[in-house]
Image (cartoon, rainbow, N blue to C red; front, side):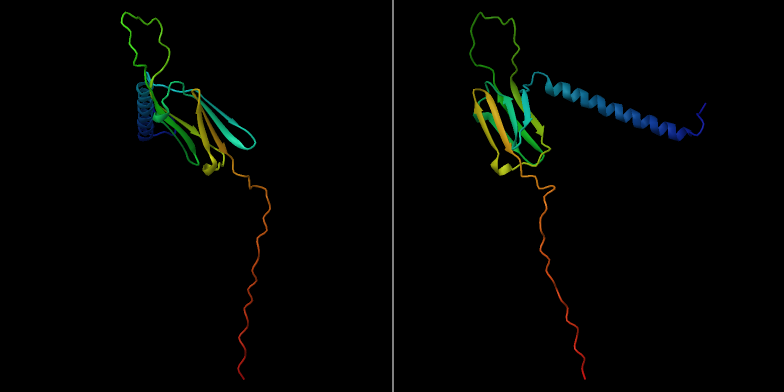
Length: 159
């Protein structure tokens, strides 16, 4: 029995849309699981001060030569690789391995107007510190706009 006001084609169209939606969601969940398994995800702190946006990322053991930091008006990207130690000892068994290794990429969305030309980053003792100075807020500020006066002369009458 079809509910009042719904035609069979409409119900079939909705069913197909829901099937596509669940299919896309399942693919996204599987891709996330495969991509994140065993990957290194550095911890990040993001804070705002009066003058700047500051980001701290824990990157202990990351080779600075394999670290890339970039920013644009919408996001900051931190990417690189943290390799396992090449030291091997015979007869050693691991009882616990909690540290993560591998390639990483963190994208931090930025919703503030920042001055990219004055941005800076430092890596010290495994802590990456990024400073993104804010642009001076121009909202609410009154700016005088000069008005140029143009006078059109009337054509003179011929006698």
